[in-house]
Length: 381
Ligand SMILES: NC(=O)c1ccc[n+]([C@@H]2O[C@H](COP(=O)([O-])OP(=O)(O)OC[C@H]3O[C@@H](n4cnc5c(N)ncnc54)[C@H](OP(=O)(O)O)[C@@H]3O)[C@@H](O)[C@H]2O)c1
Image (cartoon, rainbow, N blue to C red; front, side, top):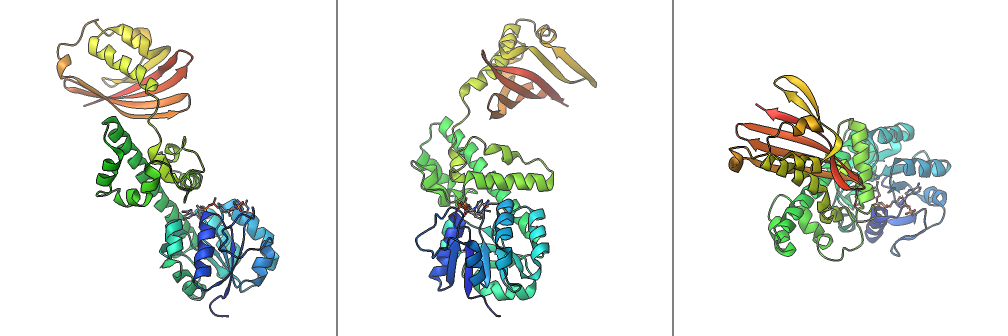
């Protein structure tokens, strides 16, 4: 057999629906199946995935995750012929991709996609294709109707590269969120802010996602749930902390990932104990520290080479009740604040004369409002 001529697309969600529509519009003989039965009217459908697979030379998977791929493949296994090519566009973990490649052998193509629904519709995707050379040659004409093919050595590497690309995407959307919050705090008009951001490093994201960043967002193209899934897969695979993995929590899972850039800033109430803490330093009056901290708090760090752990009373006793002589020259700022329901972490930089301190806070929302549960600090040389 040469180039496949009947294509079964399993999974007709956002991406599968767009792929099937594009392939159909390019004259391919496409039959689609999706678990829910919900699919675009542009795609010919069947209610039985095994029937779709039995008719096909090429089976395209566009499923949410690895377990969905496993479940669907197990269900159609008996309908697959030895020369049927399985082309998996789903974003799965490197270990899952490697396992599918091992199980299906030379007829498996792992082909995660860079680009979203508009790129699929326009045939402008970037396709990271890992396959046996002969198999890739057979599917290349079909893939080229969807976008540009980039050959990758093996399925695990293709899956890992896809996750890395999405880590970049998540970082960009969270950078955009920080930037829009700063613009809002300066009362800058949203439209003008976006115009300027379109000229800079976040320009591509802002231009593509502008409708999601103003007013009523359209239907999601790539959901928060799917991006969060990818970040969890990446953090698991790398065993390396991934700050953005927690950054998406708080945005509705079915919203487009770009909506995460418009998530409102945390409730200002969480800043109250940090402001009381700043007042304590500014005035030297320990009463402000008692407002800021829980009575059980500890303040810990390394002082002159020795670890110290003060209870709140010990800490308050360090302050004389009046400002430091150089108070007008001292500065303090909150650098980061991450709220997770009833707990939060914050980082602050204090420049006190020749000393610069980094303070790390753990905060808790109690019945009496937010309080600092503990502080650890580092004094920079
Ligand atoms: N959307 C994008 O921009 C984009 C871009 C690149 C890559 N991707 C990746 O492409 C894949 C599909 O994404 P998507 O945005 O199209 O997601 P989606 O809209 O949520 O669609 C997911 C599809 O998976 C099916 N599915 C989920 N669990 C299943 C299960 N256990 N058994 C059978 N079918 C199951 C759904 O079926 P029903 O809904 O019919 O139940 C649906 O067809 C994901 O791996 C995603 O990470 C997406």
